[in-house]
Image 1 (tube, rainbow, N blue to C red):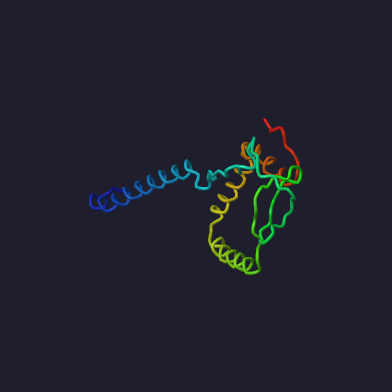
Image 2 (image 1 turned 90 degrees about the vertical axis):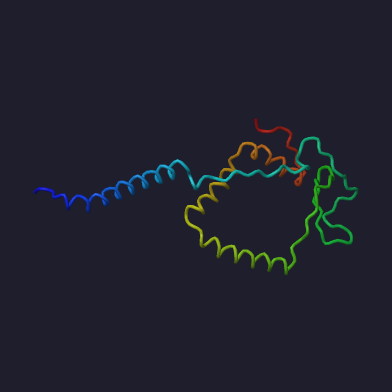
Length: 154
């Protein structure tokens, strides 16, 4: 079968369009594969002053979780009596507000894709695996129990 000159001009634009679409698809695929949209997000949580070496805090004369004239809870190192900080307890209204916020957050979370959720989980996993964070964890947890952590993981 002989190709007529009238046949070629009408088919040629489709061939060019097909090649262009193939190139665009290939470029997008290369970009997507080289840029992991689900990679974890880097963030840092600063180590509290109370957990840094050499920290000396106020020593309570009569350590207690109760503070006279306040509903706040006092946190202290039971081994040394050092004040670590204070927290305000949740109230029934505060709990209701937290539940309401969580309900709204769940509605937004339900709209996320599997990839977006995996990104959140990978970010959490990355933080849990970060060596520096793991070194500081015992320093953060021990003072409130009265334990001493004298050596860090090297």
